[in-house]
Image (tube, rainbow, N blue to C red; front, top):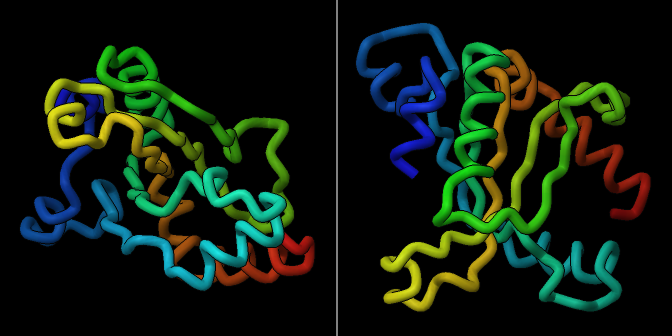
Length: 156
């Protein structure tokens, strides 16, 4: 994972940006584990009752100042020999549904490093969301609420 940050150019931990007093969203945005009621909702609405299909119980967002840095980080993650990418949701590209105004690239992945294996975690799937900082700001302001309304209207 350390190689991801080297490939990502201006990527820094959010704590570093805040400590330096910069007005930027770039860095890691720590997320809580998905709430149980939302996991059950996804199992029922989207996955036909199959809990093994919920791939984002554990998730984090990586926020970038440029799309080039985001693309470089995506390449580094995909090429990392200690990562198995299970699924990619491209909500940033030309074919993405723009009705919610929200954009990201969401990767569901497994870490298959010796350390993950020694801890019994190499089968665990997590989600890493890659966002440009403008979309991160929008997500905080109104974008996620709009997305939730859209998702609920679709019954997902």
